[in-house]
Length: 498
Image (cartoon, rainbow, N blue to C red; front, side, top):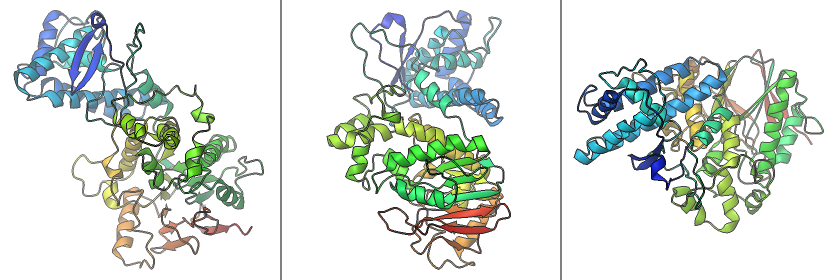
């Protein structure tokens, strides 16, 4: 979410929030003047709301919209509420950022609160009344902040557009882009119903030809790259990127099948692996020269008019990083940065983990700690933890939030190799941990990639985990295999003998 700096001060009030700037309009306030004073007092902690004041009201607003989001209304409602929840969290963080800073900070908070008088909406204070704790005024402020608040300085992943040209009238609705992105990629379900036939394919690393071989051996891909799998469900467990030259072809094929499969009752789920996340963080260690060159082709999502994605603001960390790169690397970096064109596609079509029937799929592995075990009161557990993980990753990909903590580090769900070790015994600590994870998710088995099984697909822990990364990409030279799981739970290895 971003806003272009305004040079026409008379059009609004410049408001400092956590080191950022908001432009607030000057429309008529829905509250009488005394309510503005209540809002200012609440913001500064001098009255009504006590020490928390406006911050508490914003936190309550965030909680309320979060509860509404959890109720899962219509798709449009969920998207809109997701945006409001995000802004409420950012607003609370911004107010917290200036709290306790002495008289200057209190004056700044009063300015933030008084900007609510220009919000022109927000509800909650109808009838010309104001509330002692500033709640209605906080609602008005929240209305002003939606579409006008620049994320706090700590949100380093957010790119701001370049300053407006002389004579160019700046937009007063900078949240349109963020709202469009969130609406275009609503939360995908975590759990899907059982399927008569599930086909799972492992890491493909820039080798679209290997992916086609695997899908044709599984009888879900036709000679013209069309879906022929009927009601089958296909899951690709991540690592589409790096090590090979056909990365965009892989994404195009998977997303094409994702659109076609539902027409015949099937489905395609695409997961994110550690290499996709590495690219979003500008870690290009495993990119080939052809992989860099592939992103110079202005086709599909990289056409000049596709989405009209803004370039990073000159002062953003992404702008500095990309500017320091060699010229041949920049197109890829622009496409895969948070909020970039390709990353936005991923945000709307991929997940970290998904459950189909009684099987959970993830790139590396899900540990009990990833699923909220031992996290204390209020921490999402099991399926709810997966949903939060997927949602947090989506917001990060869109460039409106930081990378979720659960996805950081070498033991995250996309990096873990705990269940892929050679010679894993059924009574090992790893198999015990696997059992806890399966119980938390109420499933019978886990399917993972990430760790090449050069002898082919393998199982461990009494068939409760299947490792399906066979190193089929040309970079590894492994065999091309896919895993088939019937509704009864019986599994088959589908090997391409060509």
